[in-house]
Length: 84
Image (cartoon, rainbow, N blue to C red):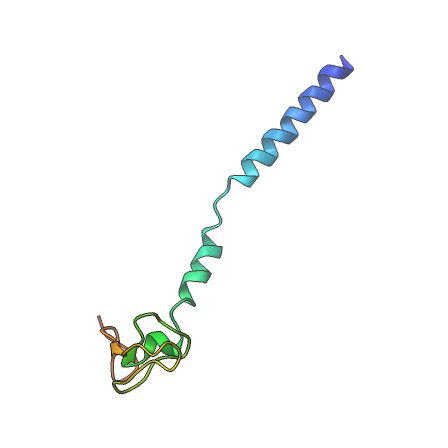
């Protein structure tokens, strides 16, 4: 009888740990995606196609990091935000 109780308790603990570990933490992943594209390499009028760190510019030119020609950023707006 004592062994049966021990096995039953072990199964309950195992099931509880398994269920808790399968919970999806969507709040954590949402925080990561909101801060992903905030740097100059994403928000400037012209950006490096390789998105090198701090490679954005307000005029055409070359990336200071990799030397590639900067391309026009389609998501850029002159007043700093866009209306949808």
